[in-house]
Image 1 (cartoon, rainbow, N blue to C red):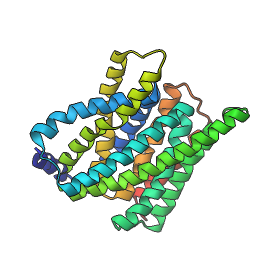
Image 2: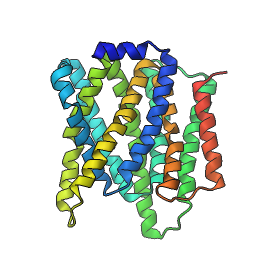
Image 3: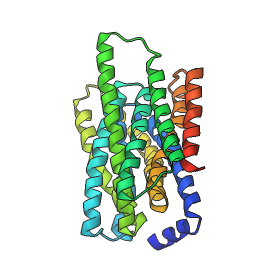
Length: 303
């Protein structure tokens, strides 16, 4: 199965396939963020999603794919802890701040850090125009967060909470940069990308769901388990497309480019924020979104 899937993806032009997978991942991640932020509670949402995608991949790791080698398992274990930290930080940020504030800060922080790490780990090289595009992309994304922040008047207590929220969102972006490079290294090192993905998603069910369960026990009013389950199943399929798509993109192409292009998810996230969460969109933010698109194009194409 792994050989058949690998053959299918490698039968296309690697650069085109990597770009396509990255853009699909970007759209999926914006949807995933909305699923995680909305509804019942970000902690419970994420816990339900992780349980569901772990159960979905259980038959694959039992009957289809072999046990990973000790070296690959070590990479998966480290990835497990990085993703656990990321999931906790992201949920904490979503509880405290608006989707259109938290999401851009986290996504704007990660591409630059990811590119620097990839330079040393994978010898990824950017042309000067690409570095300029990356700076434009990250700067525009963070500017979008600042523009969203100015839409609300806040008292002293709210400003203090805002500072904490921003700090958590920045740390979330750092985790994204770290696990993007580690997962790219792991999926390449394993030599069996789909086996690596199956074990990655299976192990994800043993981390954050425990955090969610602890939070659920402390709730005075318990949410509907059926609604949580539905959100978990839908979120699982989106997660396969989001995180799986990104890992496959870094397996086929440049890690730096994938890390940068994936952050075009902020465009989709802004649309979701406006139509789903009823958040406002003004001319300033439209201009910033255009700059994000320009930056992404410059990262992908050199001249």
